[in-house]
Image (cartoon, rainbow, N blue to C red):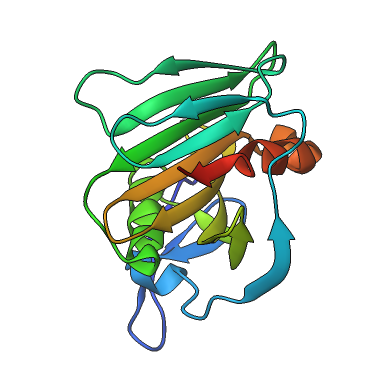
Length: 194
C-alpha cells in the first residue's frame, strides 16, 4: 500500500510535508533555505582544456567550455535560458539563464530554490557557499529533490552585478551527479565576465 505525502503541523505551528522515506520539508519554502552562507576562500579558475567561449548576447558574461566534451545550443526564443549544454554521450545537462535585471544574489538563490520546489516539493539544499570564480564573487548552490519519481540534483552558480543576473546550472540524476562532481565543477568554472 502506497502512503504518499502527508501534510502536518509542528509543535511550533510550522506546516511540513512528510515523505514516505521518512524525510520532511517545510511547506513555507523560505524556512528550508539556510540563512547564513559560508565563504569558501579558495579561488576557482577555468580549466585549461576549456578553449571555446560561448558568449551571451544579452549580458557581458560567457562560459568557456571544452568543445570535445560539451555541446551547446541556443535556448528557445523569448526564454530566459539563453544557452543549453549537454555533456557529449552522457546524461548531464546545463543551462545559462541570463537576465538584464540586477537581482541581489541572495534573492536569486531564494528564487532558484522556489523554482525547484515548484517541480519537486521535497527539494532540499545540499550545500551553499560564496565562491570566487575567475574573479567573480557568486553563490554556489547544490539542491536535490524528486520529480515524477526521479531523484535529481542541480549544481549551480548564481551571479549578479549592477546590470544583469545569471544562473549557470548543471543538472542530472542524483547518483550521476554525486559520482561526477569534479567534472561538473570544471564546467561551471568556465563562467567569466567579458
